[in-house]
Image (cartoon, rainbow, N blue to C red; front, side, top):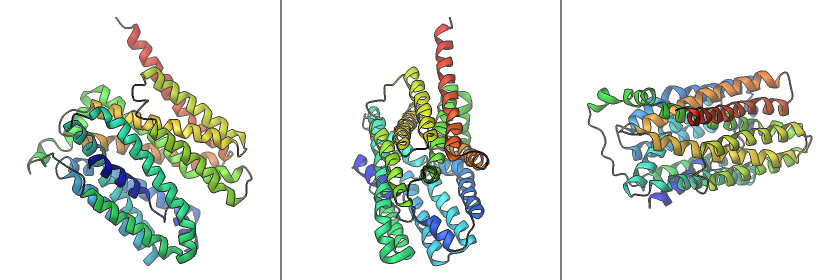
Length: 384
C-alpha cells in the first residue's frame, strides 16, 4: 500500500489541468509579463519563507496530515483564480500554492524513506522515488494533453474544476499512506525543532554538501524548464508544434526518473561526468537553433532528472536523528533560493542575448559542480 499510495499521490499532485493555461488566464485578465514575473517571485518567496517551518512541523506532527493539507491549499488557490480573477487574487493563489508545496516538501521524502527503512527496504528508495518522479511527470504530461479539449469544452472554469478535483483526490490519497512514526512531544519543538535540522547540516559536512547538491541540481534545470516554450518559439516552428517539442523534454525527464534505481550505485566520478555531459548536451541543443536540438535537450533534462533523484538519495542516506523532514526542507529552501536566482539571471541575460545562449550560459554551473566534485574526489584519494 505504501508504494502504490506514493505513486498515486505523485501522479495526482501534478495532474493539474490549469498548469498549461494559467498564463493565458493572467493575460486575458490584463496582467502584463512584468506582473506575471512578480507573481512568480511571490510564489518563490512564499516557499522560501515556509520551507523550513513546514519541515520542522513535519518532524513534530503527522507527516500524513501535512500531505493531506498541502494539495487542499493548492486547490483553493486554483479555484480563487477562476472565481475572482485579478492581480491580487492571483497573488493570493500563488501564496496558497506555495504554502501547499511547502507542506508537502520534506514530509513526502521523509515519510517515504522512513517507512521503507522500517520495512528493511531503504535500498529501494532510489527506484521508488525515481518512479514516483516519473509518474509525476506523466501526470503533468497527461494534464497538458487533456487541457486543450477540456478548455475548449468549458473554458477556464472547466480546467480549474478538474484541477481542484485532482487536488482533493491527492489529499484523499495521503490518508491511505501508512505512518508508524509517533509525533514528537509538545515540548520537542523548543528542544530540537528546527535547530536540530540546521545543526546537523552545520556539524556534518557530508550532509551540507548533499543539501547543496540537491539545491543546485534541482533548481537550475527546474527553472529553465519554465522557459522551454520560448526556446521552442525561437527555432521558428509553428505555435502548434511547440507542445511537441515540450513533450520531448518531458519524455527525457520521465526516462531519467525511471533510470534512478539502476543508476543508484553511480560513484562520484560517474555522477560528475553525468552532470558535465548533460550540461554540454543542453548547451549544444539550445544553441543549435533547430527543432532537432530538442532531442539533445530532452536527453540533458533526463540526465538532470536522474541526477536530482540520486542527489536526494545521497541526502536521505546521510541524515540521522529525528529531523529528517527539516533537513530535507532546508535543502528545499536552498532550491528555492537558487531558483529565484536563476529566474533573475534568465530575465537579465535573455534581454541581451538569445534564449538559446541564455540556456547555454545557465548550464555552466553544472560544469562547475562537476569539476568541483571531481577535484574533491582527487583530493580525497591523494590525502594520506
